[in-house]
Length: 154
Image (cartoon, rainbow, N blue to C red; front, side, top):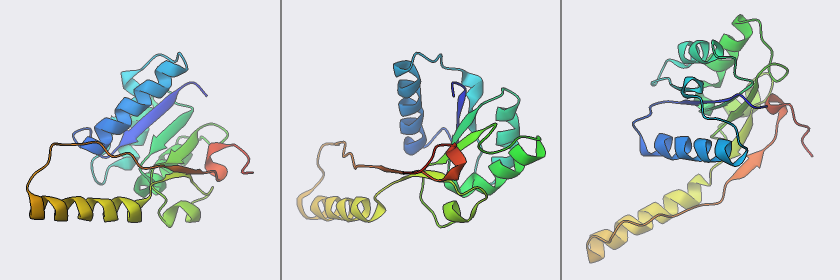
């Protein structure tokens, strides 16, 4: 797969900017040219039309917010395409919805409990000791392979 699209809720958020940077970096590592037409922002409730826009540029994979999976699957199906045969899908949250889609959605699981605990600890430290310089904290991610990406789960 060489025409990988990125779908986000909004390109204005920090999380989306980080995802876009990671997306561009992954493409560059594989010597795949970046195509601005393969990046779309859907807003909160516009996954269907954003996917239609992406499909005009023939992606063979889409990295998407899991909460938009039903809209994305519907747009792909209405275009006469199949997941994963024509377009592979990978979500970036492991919500219960991911296991209920047809086919079940491959996802990147984010360690939300550990992230929340760390964030609350940082906030309490700031309230007790004053502001600290900004710092980047990276948490490990896990890939849960299901049927939407076309790979066989081991």
